[in-house]
Length: 206
Image 1 (cartoon, rainbow, N blue to C red):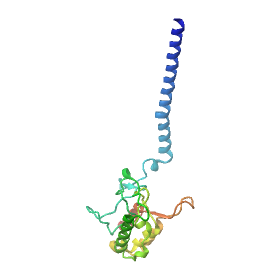
Image 2: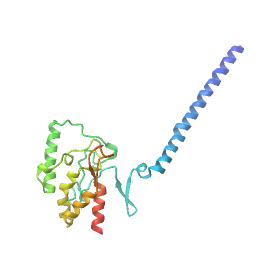
Image 3: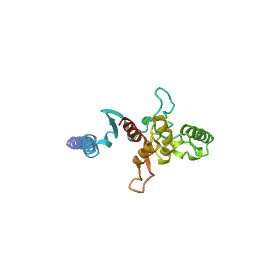
Image 4: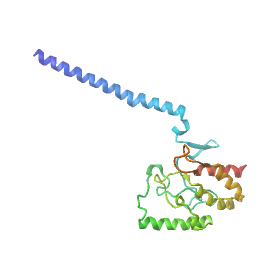
């Protein structure tokens, strides 16, 4: 009888210790650690931790990390006054990211790319041979906020005409907002569309 009581007591004590360890781990990993990481992120990387939101006149106009459409108000047609991003099969919705998963030789993709190439060329008044790949293909995430310098450059003439600006002035904005490879060797030079369009807006208002 004493052995049975003793064994039961040991089992209860072992269970209580396991429960205590579980509670401590829950507090550390579920409360303390997230608070510490959040605090460090807010202190050292405030903008990035909050989604790299871009604010103009006290109003959030978008994120530097997420692409968005620049269409004529109330339509799905691109506004000629603004630089356009690369295509997005998700409509730039960050909740439905991902590529179309179509292979490079897929007939549907080939047809879509050919049609997009013709449309981009006509919209920007350039030959189809000058249309870069990123102008007619989406990124892996479908919300890439960047375009290549080549895509930005073929849009310069159209943006300048639509806004009554000099081509050289608009080209200068593109040059000023062209970022090089990360760390000098990762990725390719790129242009953030949101930042470029905001700079364009500021230039027109100055």
